[in-house]
Length: 197
Image 1 (cartoon, rainbow, N blue to C red):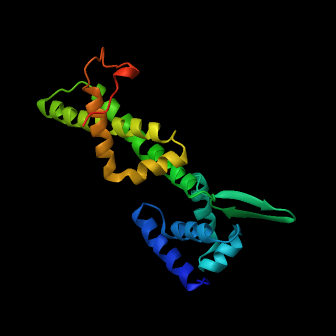
Image 2 (image 1 turned 90 degrees about the horizontal axis):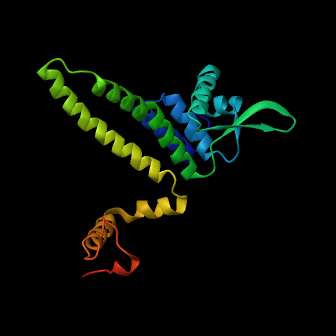
Image 3 (image 1 turned 180 degrees about the horizontal axis):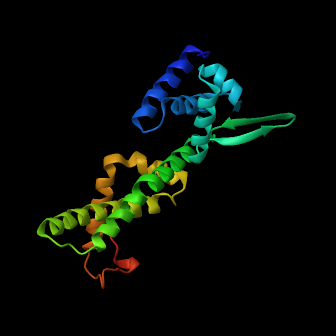
């Protein structure tokens, strides 16, 4: 590798972590390099900096493009393709979560729905369907939560993530508001909402 020590340490670590996340080590290294690069890089520059083969770089870039994690850019007067990651780290996180959901959660939910619609012929299958129903409900809950959270503006998302265990207090206040007298059909007039101690 032809990288400064700080960058090399990050790139090597990201490659190792990538293999644990289910991507090729080289793909992880390419992404890490593009993430910290001061400008978009072309495939030849990536080959030179990482010391990997051109074919590995080409396949890695295709995989990253399939995940929508790198953008193709062109430089005026240069016919080569250049690659960069989005500047906004939150856009990267949102893209990564969306792509993982498409590849992992959605197919699992589809399979669970299909299995739950089948008629169970034995006690063992009925037991299995009950357990699959629990898993289905959990995945549906996550999918619904994700659909709500993905619509949040980044500022709100950061606020949500920084709440941590304070969410418990917010839920406790909500519970106290729900128990107020004068509620009809689960809803209260604005004048009925009063904080309690």
